[in-house]
Length: 254
View (cartoon, rainbow, N blue to C red):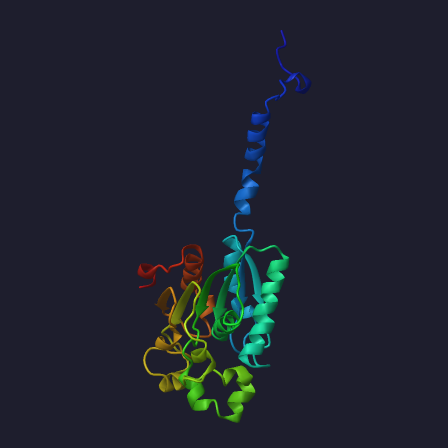
C-alpha cells in the first residue's frame, strides 16, 4: 500500500499564529545580516592624503556589518571651517538620504579636526561614536616651527597653517568635545627631523600628549607611525571595538 503523501495532500497551515512563526523564521537570516544596516561610518582621511589611505579600514568596517562612506576631499584647498562644511556636511547629507539612523565617524589626523569644527556649529541628532587616529587636537609643534615658510603653505594649504599649538590655533579654540570620542595615538616615527621638534613620544607629526582633548571618553597609545596608522591591524581592531562598546581594549594594546 502506497502511503506517500503528495504536495496537494499535505495538511494546510490554517493557524495564523503558526504562519507568523514560520514567516519570522524565514526572515531571521536577513535580519541578522542587516543588523547594522542603518549604522553608517563616515571615514575622513588626513592632510595631503586621499580616500585610498582609509581603504583597509573601509574593508574591515564593511565586513563588520557597517555601511561605510569613505570621503575624498581636497585637504589643501581651503581653511578648516570651509573644508568641514564641504566634507563633513556633504557626507552627513548623503547618509541621511540613504536612511541612516546612526552616524559614526572614523578620522585620521586633520579629519578629526574637521569633525570637531563641524560639530561646534551643527547639532547632529544621529551622532553615534567618533574615533580619531593621530589627531592634532592641541595642534602640532611642526606647524609652530615651519608654518610660516612658503614651502609649508604650498604643501599643506591654508588648513595646515591653522594647526599650531598656540591658544589661537583652530584646534585649541574649538574647546572640549561633547560627544563620545575615542583617540588612538601612535608612538613610532619614521621622520626623525620632525620628531626632533616634538617633545615626548610622537608619531612623526603629533605628540602623544597633543592628541588628547578634554571631554574624550577614552585614549590609547599603539606602536604606529602617523602616515601608516590607519592600515595597522591593531588600530583597525581598536576602532571597531570602540564603535561597538564605547571603549578601547587596553590590555590588548599593551
